[in-house]
Length: 450
Image (cartoon, rainbow, N blue to C red; front, side, top):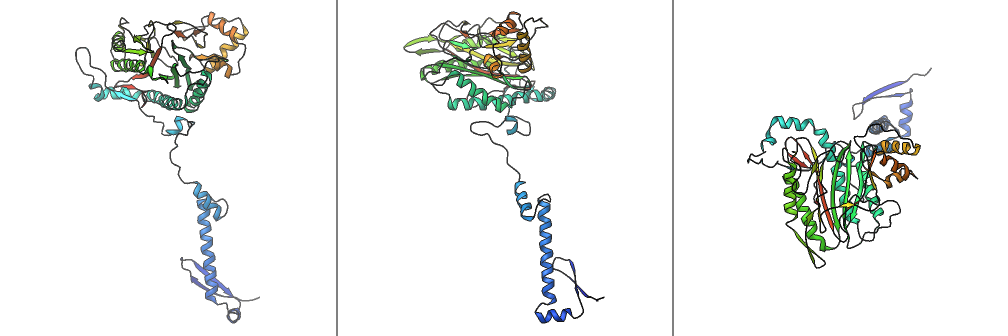
């Protein structure tokens, strides 16, 4: 049995080391050129390497060797906030991970008829508390509005003459679905994309097979909606390529902004309509050598908006003589105006594409099996939100026209055909959604564009 001699020392990092030698080994190693100091240095070096390896493994969650650990450490670097792609594809909720979305334009309410200012609302603790209590609702509107702003900015970057109306609508809707992060009835498109042309003022979207192509001399109303949890943004603008329509667009935009400015808590709806008409009719336009006074389309209106309900019961006229009903705190309105070089009245025309389930309909017996199936599809995918035939096609439905007609005949679904002024006339539209918050009026869909 051999005996060993041992020596101990403290390394540079404060660790203790022991070196064992058999009797006579130190002398032998000394003769071969290996000293105790050299052995100690080697051991200390090995200890340092082992320590570095442990540190690297900790940084890399203990997986792999030191090199792999270092790589994983690099991957763990904090990423900056997401930015929108081009073309837009990142959902708005991912761009704002805090869940707080940009506010629209906040405005003070107009003074009352007796001259009293509404500035007190902005400082009232009671109104602030009421406003805060509905913050989740306002935030849903803001998310939907931010999606609308980014989609319409994208549309304006590529829309041009020569594109089919189907191509325009599908490209817009595909982008909108991504940004709103479509999720059944929880988030999605609020109604079909309107792209009404020239004398057609509203409710036109192409059905499958429609060959219509956008022309240089067309005046196109782009009206589309987004929603989060049924909180709908209804917002529209007019696209032209020929500058001869510029004054018409200016008139309608001015009229819409006038309606927004006049709107407020306790304001009579008829007063808003009268102000809109006065501004609209103050404009004259010259198109192709002929002068027209711009007329508001008197049988088209703005409207209140409710959860999953685009028209919630109140109408905002765009001519004088409307109802004396007043706007109320907490309500949401779509303020929209239409100007025309025609008669200023629209009528049903062309093939229908827009449909919507009747919000107030009760149980109605349905005999046709196909109609029952179609109603189930509508309930599951659209609820009481508007839809179009292209969206039924997209869901894989076919041969549904008879069933759709049956649902319309029973009053379960209402058709909304295109609305047109006289042939040869030109119509324009601008629209915003406003929130009548307890503290202020928020033009939630306002953007840098309009």
